[in-house]
Length: 93
Image 1 (cartoon, rainbow, N blue to C red):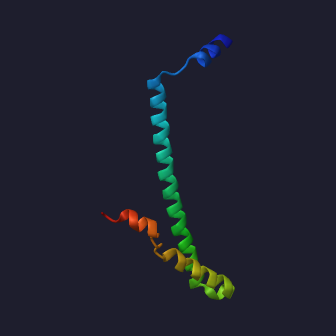
Image 2: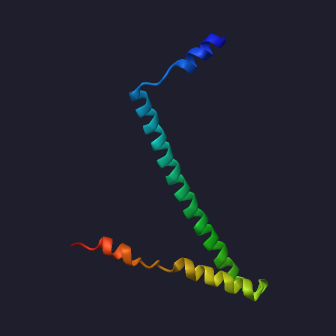
Image 3: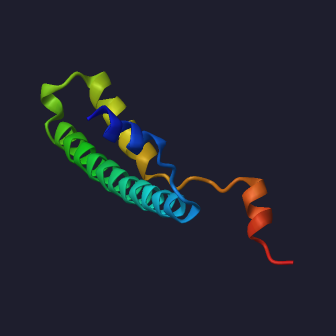
């Protein structure tokens, strides 16, 4: 039985096999990245739901907490400003 495991360990992958493994790993990474983005988006919207629920029931929460929640909502709704370098890159010559 040890000879079988030694044979498997000694077998080296060909260039084509390595390319296939790399392609599969790349596809898995892309798929996982997409799932992570989807989960982050779902978490964001769930957090927004809870934040609006806090504001709707602000009488039960401390004033500072409600203010912090309102500020968080406002900040998340802001459109990020484009950096000067990004503006130059986007311009056509």
